[in-house]
Length: 168
Image (cartoon, rainbow, N blue to C red; front, side, top):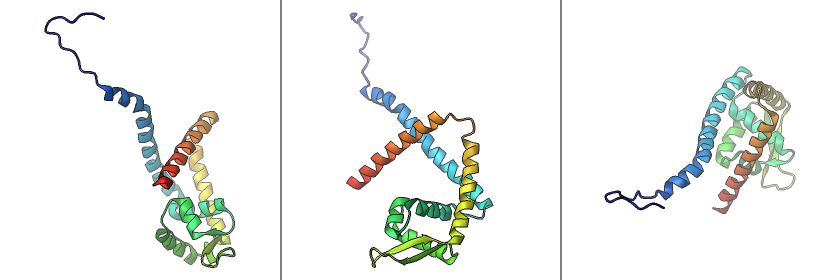
């Protein structure tokens, strides 16, 4: 350690800068995720419209299919991360288009179970094809191992977000 010359001032240490540097890759990744999410939705909307679908309809049908049989409105809303009143309006629209049917749940007569109708399956498949084509374009040339690593990272972050939400 050297002695300071007369008149030389000690530079203050910025402990916050260290924390900022340590968090920069996380902040950059977070910004990228937000941009990717917005841009994905715009391109997906365009692709789905070409197949006669909307993102809200396709996402609902896709989530419903992934949840399996005897799905209640409450379970579907939770899986989609939306409030039940918003889902009810969406289900009204899907039911009017004969894409889904609500009926009293076999397990709980106070709840509605939702099933995908044949026309809903056709709409779901058209949306799946549009989304798959877009994904093929976006991930062309990407390394499958990198995709798996990124997916694992995102699932871990989502699980921690869900745990924090449940704790509050």
